[in-house]
Image 1 (cartoon, helix red, strand yellow):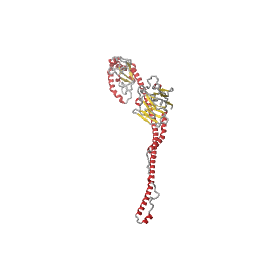
Image 2 (cartoon, helix red, strand yellow):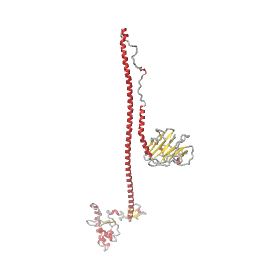
Image 3 (cartoon, one colour):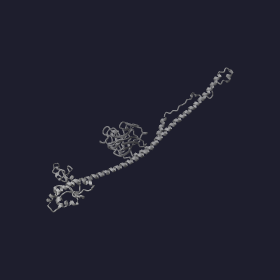
Image 4 (cartoon, helix red, strand yellow):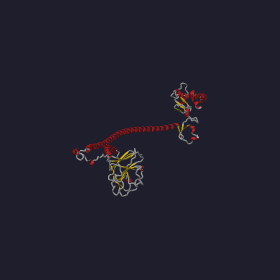
Length: 497
């Protein structure tokens, strides 16, 4: 506490009618001693399990302070606060809610209250700091104003934080909900898949058993035929050996009469079979495995087909309306007025467009997709060459075009009759559909990086690109192929699902 402040306060407490200077001189030593004692006791205050700031001028027991004075650097209860409320010299002191460690609220350099805030340095200062060199041309505001402004900013940040907390809680709940749905979907798919594969395994086992039974039956029939022939041969051998033995015994007889009386006719025994034209034909098993596999394939196809059809129906739920963008069509391609058909001609009368394909007989759809799932179908009936799929927005259109995933295309194609293939990163993958597709369905799951192609009539999956990371807009991609002097003049037709 300054000497002037101490004088004013002590003068007011003794007698507000006496001379202030006299009272200040008389009370200064006493006030200084009391303040020193107060400072020594301040550290003990908070250890006394007290939950309030104590008055520095009360004797024990100390009362609760109502205000703290930044000038006097003391805290006062209601009784000892009265001079600050009535004495004109003390009324100018800066009072505040009771706090401890008042020294921390003074400028360490000038020992004056920190009542200003430097906006430039974002630092608390006293009135004496303003002329300092380090604060020249700085902007200052009063402590209360800085407090209100900072508190307003803090409340704004707090509200923003609460809003972000709310958003994140909602996102957390959404993730938990979606995770639950995902788990449920996985469990259902696992159950269905287990049933399907169990049925397929049982079907394979049944056909394996039938295959082995058929071979075993052939083996038994072969043994029966062989045993019958061998038994007949053994019987004839016995008869011939018996006849031979009798002839040998008779041949040793020296009596002509006896020999002629008992000599049989010079012919083999009656009833013998002519074996020269008889042979044993072994069982031929060639092709048994192939026939068994064909039967298994037919059986599995019948069991699998309902699942293929169900899968096609599932992706067809994501059908979208697609139309062709004439501004992207390669010169020579003719797009119908309803924007649903495209075919190749020899006429090349089009306007220039930066979106137009120049060296690739292609056109893309007007619609683009950057999330979710979508599906569309295209009729390819009567064509000998075509390509279908999706292309990302940044694909090369003006120069040489490579229709593979590395260059932004995910397509399958027909080149020449019955030569189907998928355009992958490494090479063309030959496809072997059970029959020539008349209508092709294209399904895209943007989030999973999946592009699948279906025979829309048989529900067979022709090919799937998996595990890609799409980062751009995707456009449906169509290439009707070269006209080939009319042999490939049929258009590609976008059909309703």
